Amino acid sequence: MLSDKAFVSISEKEQSNLLSHSFQKGTFDYLPTSTTNQIIKHLYYTLSYNEDKEQAEWVAYELNGSNDKKNKFERPFFIKDPKVTSGSADWKNYKKSGYDKGHLCPAGDMTFDKKAYDETFYTSNIAPQLHDFNDGVWNKLEQKTRYWSVKYKKLYVITGGILSSNLKTIGKENVAVPNYFYKIIGSDLGGKFKMIAFLVPNAKSDKPLYDFVVSVDTIEKMTGIDFFSKLEDKIETNLEKKNDYKEWSFN
Image (cartoon, rainbow, N blue to C red):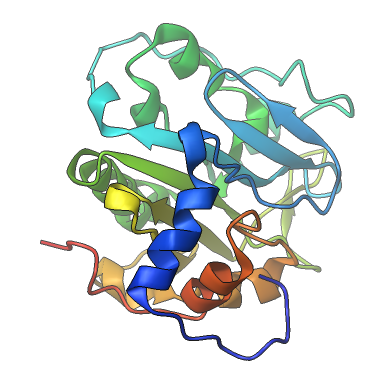
């Protein structure tokens, strides 16, 4: 919640009662706010495209553990997103740039359906990532997220780069290179909503994942985006100030 309101403490019983309204009939709206007003909905994920930075400011999707099928689909070529009216950046901007075409919604999260898998290869769903980051700590976090989707049944996942000013750019279209990437994960297993947020430098790291846990408030202040804004205000305020990872399994 983008607010200067003081922390509001509520009991678990009150939180449970408030959550029952938020999750009625599975209609919970988990999408963040958009600072660009260019929201693109694909089959299994939604994004907010930032034309100035030539990438999504966030990508959001549900990750259902029951869809944890590991089909071996052939990787398609990266192509421009046909739904981005301003035109998403060409993959050639990444050529010889020294950066990977890093997925925001991972292809590995969409192996249950060929079309869902292929849609992750739109260039609106990638951002420049150093290889040692993309193949290292970021991949480790993606794998942990899939593990949690099985353990906690269903997750709400929101991820993107911190698109601050004066970032390095690559290619003829000046694709911005984020210095940090974030991932925010929510779970409502058993009617108890919990969330965890990660802020990870775009660099090689051997640190444990829990070292990158921050409050959702921290990421909101860095991005100007309001996450989980459709939660009851008391719950949102209560949860977004926390940076405690003990409710999540890191084993």
